[in-house]
Length: 471
Picture 1 (cartoon, helix red, strand yellow):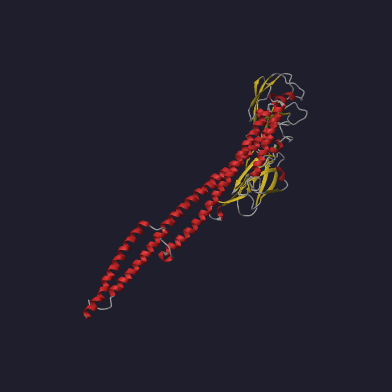
Picture 2 (cartoon, rainbow, N blue to C red):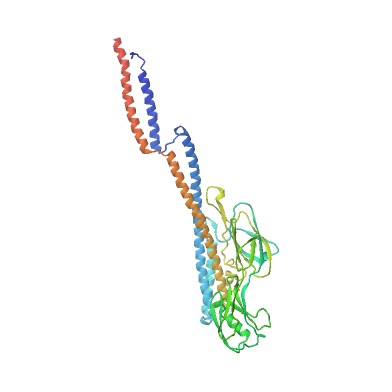
């Protein structure tokens, strides 16, 4: 190799040294930031994937935060329902105890009435004050607004909407009752008139949904007296007696207190042959919604279809009736359980005020207050019936809310958490620094850098050799 002043070895070593320094600088940046991709040149394709993952992850984080807030809101409503249910249980107990008029003094009944008044006031106070982030939950402001129109609108009442599709404008439901409900009905005694006496003495077992009672009949009893004995224990049996609907009749007809196929009456002779033995069941009303048969329990109608879920009461009698229910858009409590608008869902949180608990047929809880139509001094048995219906209504509302919380909100939380975990792992694989690899690279680059500097010094000695020849 000729000995020249132009030292190509030095230039080559300088290029190697610069590249090594650049690689070392990039490695140091990765180690200090923890990110493998710090600029587009590091990995153009990886940068695109990383940015997309980061955007999606932020969306999932926001959705997870929203759903966690929804879980907290529903938890507040659930606790309030639980407290209301506790007060209703107390009211039922007090009303039933007051039905035992022979065993309670007037002052004890008055004390029970005072407790019922306080419990109802407590329920209304809970409803007024239950809120989340400034929004009332149980006062009806979060319910789905419903209007009913049509000639038969009066036959339908107490409409509760549990859920509805979030989008699509107002929803119209065509509701028709095609058959009345019926009570269990059984005529057990036929006499010529109310004053006629039965021909023999004996005992009759009267049975209904609430239980069984034994009625003792003497030969001098009239139909009026037999009916009175049966009606005196109706709170035990769930069975009442009348004369079959004819004013001048000596019949004794048994009727179940409520309507529906689950209701029944039964009469059995224990001794003697006083009654015509038998059993009869009631019948549920027949109701269609948008041409589809609804699920009916007596006069309570339940309908679920295409995201719409509601319940309402239908008149037990009166024949066929039709109406249109319109569920207003943008009403109810709407929650987003995912990352886009398609995951929005709307539920109805109905009013739980005392004047809303119960129904139009039996009465409302507010009527149990002192001076009300169903206070303890008027009809403690009916008061207990209303309180039980109110308790069932709250149980249904709480159960529906719990179902939504468990199967939709809970499932959304689990799904979003899994997606968050997967996206974070994918983001880490693409964008995070592998510290073990980067540390090894840095050690290699340090060795190469020191070697290049040392060799550059050797290469520069070539120029010194040229000067030695010129001397």
